[in-house]
Image 1 (tube, rainbow, N blue to C red):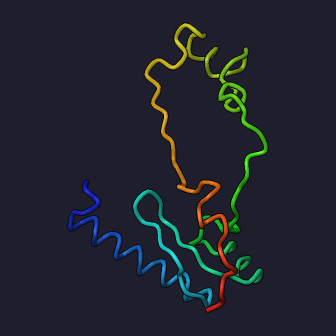
Image 2: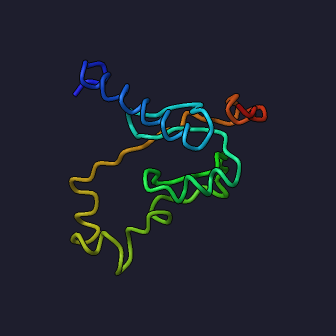
Length: 126
């Protein structure tokens, strides 16, 4: 389905209504909405508001917004641990067949060291 189709636009409008309703129940406004690659929103919440939203059955997760800095530059075989007797390579036929039919997806946040997003001003409360 194309993200520009009528059905996709209608569904994103529905999600925006849901985002607004969830935010209104928390007493805040949605700052950003995500409805293509994932379904979510950003909002400025007090610690108590965040705890209340976490307990809500309509909310899967509440996470504090923070720019993450990697502590090192691991090799992918160290990070993902596919090798060794308990690794996925052994389970799928060893190194000779490692990666056969594998598709790797990368989600790029778009943030880089020089990005203005790494230097956001303090959030204003609604």
